[in-house]
Image (cartoon, rainbow, N blue to C red; front, side, top):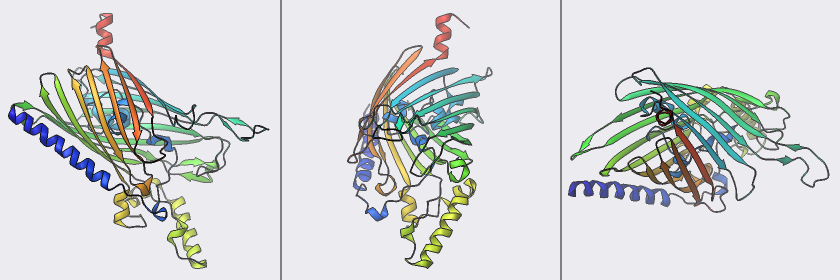
Length: 403
């Protein structure tokens, strides 16, 4: 018991130390340093489910569930149940408007008698509410812009401890009109993408306790550009590299604590800014050429260039990495408490918030809820609430007496 308490104290101390390191790094960046990465279909950065959101938007190496399609689809091969379906709902930016929301349906099914492989799918729909082209109400047009995607995936164990997965996705973005990066458009834009991921898990013995230590990675949205404005204004998809680890320690019989960490980096080249070039005609010519090169760059070339193209050098490249740190306590896989923190550098978007949440599971269903508390001033992410309802297929089989 003494050894168990000592390990738990060390884990807790590590979390506290990392939190204070992140908090100290949250100094406000000068206005000239603000240089977020520009992408199309920006709603893909929103976590769809309450469990991942309550731990600071993470899930690369956590226990598999029905929502792993977004975080790391290769985890499905290690899922305990043969299948599950999940429905999530997020009323987004509730402090500003009341008709923007994200809905997500996802699930998986194990194949074969050995349970070493699984197929999965998800449907994602993001509504931007009702928009009127003439806010004065004297005329104009009423639009209902939205973004959606549908995808299918396959994952398989390659060994007792390692699996890989792949996902193919169709994306459709219909913004109706926009005066921002998307351009002025009257028709939607389509794109295709793929994800590739891996998951490794092991069960080390610490003292007399069998723990679980997992690692995961997912490169998502590798694909074509979104051709806004009939192809005149193409946008990069939010290709993203997610790497995470999770350590689960048994506190006592039926009591487990998981500590999780994810890091993310958008694999998208930085859009050139006029301020980064010299004044005068020569600087204008260099800027125009650089912008045209960026606009015509292929997505694959952009992935490799994204590691070295920041105007501020390696220091700015490191600012493009965001961090998620979270913990999950569960009692007998039936009752869950979660908390986490998400940090993004102020110069790259300044999204910083706490997430808290809880869940309750029965044989057939599980209900999860999360709540977001923003730490950056005037953040529209503050007070965001999410709900996820999941159904376990093995539990349904038992109810209906199927074997």
